[in-house]
Image 1 (tube, rainbow, N blue to C red):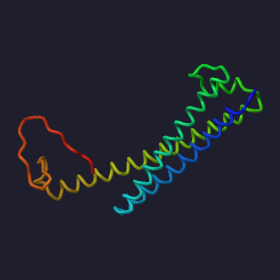
Image 2 (cartoon, rainbow, N blue to C red):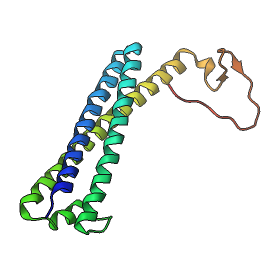
Image 3 (cartoon, one colour):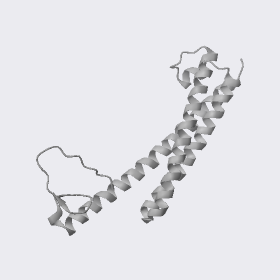
Image 4 (cartoon, rainbow, N blue to C red):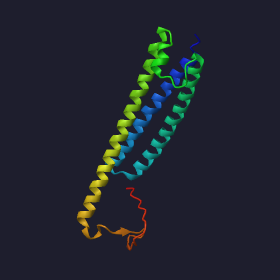
Length: 165
């Protein structure tokens, strides 16, 4: 068996794991800037996080392409799982494939947890801020304000709100 495509896939998986880990670090930088309310640092952290997300996306495309190349070489169907593919390999290569896939899943889980944590914190902070504003300025509750900060009269038609914080 020619193992070049298998090793290429495992290498691409390692690159994606590294990209995901870098993304997690950038997300932690975003979270730190949000918690510190350091808006200039947040802007830079968001730019770095966006670049890291692009790198993850590029690595994902490369890994997917190498996976399909590997499946084509082994004659497995394109929708084969890693488990099924590993069963078609000689014993000495199975653990390498399974270890690479496990490392990828763990990195993806860390990224998901970091995103969920940041999202929960920002949502909580936005809710607290909204409640504080309603307590401080109860007369503003239920009103809609334009870009100038003045109250706007709204008819009974449809209305689109930008709720970004």
